[in-house]
Image 1 (cartoon, rainbow, N blue to C red):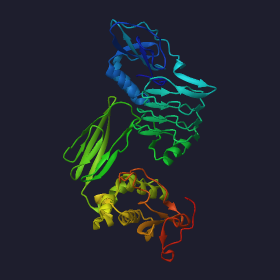
Image 2: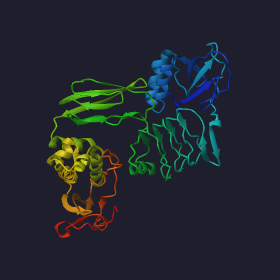
Image 3: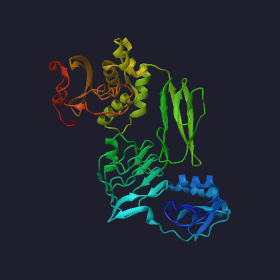
Image 4: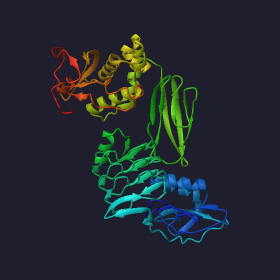
Length: 456
């Protein structure tokens, strides 16, 4: 029986004869002839030559101990030792196809890629895809990873307590960041222009977890790769993107029933007809499955679909209201273009417009929000008033015995003349009357008093 004492972090050590050290550790070599690349995995002091594909499989599973062990078993078979302590790899390029002489016992990290001053990571200059910041670093300085187009994942040690502004600015390939519970201080926009970022990893209840929620960033509590949706609920005609979190490998997608749901190369599901199907994502030699249920398109089914998609049993009422607020902003468009043309169809004033057509104006938003709140058994009022001298509608909800204003329409603004916003704003979310009266007017005697300033 194979016994595993301990598996350390996979250190993929990229060593090039022409480029010197480009990873975490290794030796600088030189060459002027044609290059041949070989891939090696080391278990403690014993090295094994593997294919590029096998090397990438190990790489993609390095954050999941069980998956890594299974991957190594599949690749090495009977050659795999009964126990080992450290796993690491090297990519060696030589001019004659022969293996370069590199002592396999070397496991000491080369810190030349890091500029560290008195415990502060000032800059990372390496080209590794996965960067494990050295233990002992207490702070990630502003712009530490600025403009690094190679890094795809950053793992921070427990010694890091502070991350300064723009620490990860313009990291065009960055997929995820792992934060320890000890990180308690965050500068402004620590993650900026990282367009491929899928999620961050942080312990639930930690400052990093709260930071992600406040910034509308997806946060997972585990480091293992997982799909954003293990079960997708869609209506016929819906499109929804599924994402593989905690993953840097390329992903291939397939559907078990294309007549029910298709899936694009980027993971976007398209519901075709009522039924069920399984969508499979394959990355790093592993498969991840998502069950897809497609319903017929109508208002009642949409309400059920929204609740099943974004509401969990362990949510507080506050979290439920916020989840519905955010779903509407991400999925419903304000009927701006027809408003400019001077004609708004009746359906845009209804819950059907918001929930089925996904195009509505203020009263359509408010009717839809109220309908979902009713299904969740959260007290909710439809408010008729005005803003800027123009008729307007929004909602009031009751949480903890107190009433609050919620204006989903105004939290889904028209930006640069376009109705394509999908970023939730909270300017008019759970506000008191003292805040709302600055921009809204309503007959106060007809509605509950919203005096609590808890969420102002």
